[in-house]
Image 1: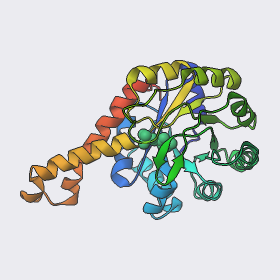
Image 2: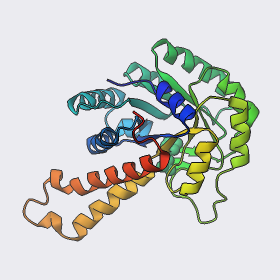
Image 3: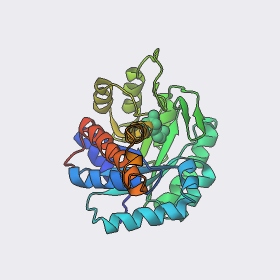
Length: 287
Ligand code: G3H
Ligand code: ZN
């Protein structure tokens, strides 16, 4: 079955490593991530954006597929099914559909409204033992239609949101969704340090995990980051492997057009991506 992400992230924070959140889009993505987590004995979080949920025909379908697959593959490591950048309505719908973890992203509201709505979502989720992630400041760039300005979070506002009883907190620290621009200034470690001082043992979340240099990832973990979200990088790996297969004409040979063959190199590439990230995050063997 699925678990809340609270326990795995509290353990990660205390143990100075991070758990990966990998976003899913379909059956292949889900299977590749689950098999890799099991093989490496790593706890894992499957992220689902509202756009991806819609693509997969809704939260109920996603929840049913993930639960069935965890059972069918005999997955023994902790798996959380987490709504990524949820709206107020989306958070409630994903909770009803059986997600075990919810991000309510109220970062585009003013802090008062963010507090009010986050508080309500926390009450609803905790009643069901479901963990909650909130966001302060914003992540730059765009992910599945969620656009952020990239404002660095105010540590005092982080404390206000942390005090609502959220289980982990995403704070904008100069991180960006998608590929990083050439002139990116890097993560704001001063802000991260100040945020951790205000929020204590609360696990912090680093969004935009694609393309952040390894040394910055490691430093962020030393400053309290316990969950790192990766989405675009798996897509890039999938795309590259699929392109190679087609450009080599493999889809034209024998039964190479069979979708189970055509999608196999991409599915393997996702495993490689997840493994590399888990090595970097230090969560291997922590299940
Ligand atoms: O919410 C998901 C992540 O923050 C993913 O960001 O696509 O840049 O890896 P990314
Ligand atoms: Zn994100």
